[in-house]
Image (cartoon, rainbow, N blue to C red; front, side, top):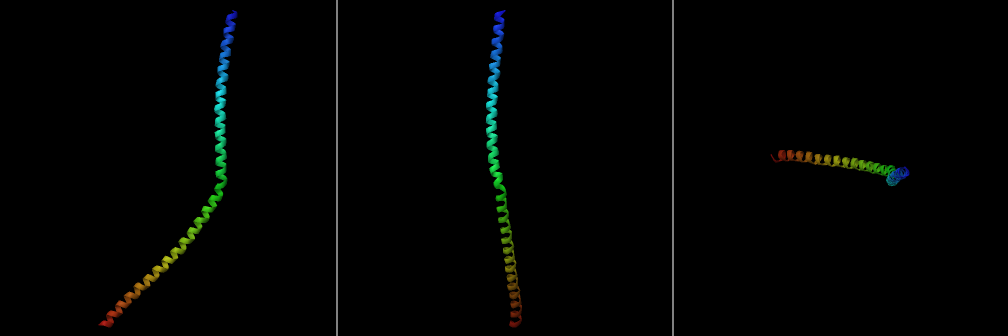
Length: 102
């Protein structure tokens, strides 16, 4: 009977050690996950705090490019008008030169 009690105690002790070992491994895994999540949180916090400034700079640059595009578009229209005027003057010149040559 005494041996049965000793054997049951040994089995309970082994099961307790096994359970403690599994809990210790699970705790180590949870600590690693917590560290990784903390690093991710710090990195994303650094990125997200800089984001509004970067977006503002990009928005300013886009506005500058739009203004430049409008200026260039106006210049292109002016050049097109000058070319059209030269083309019209050329047509008029050819018509009058034909009339004068006849």
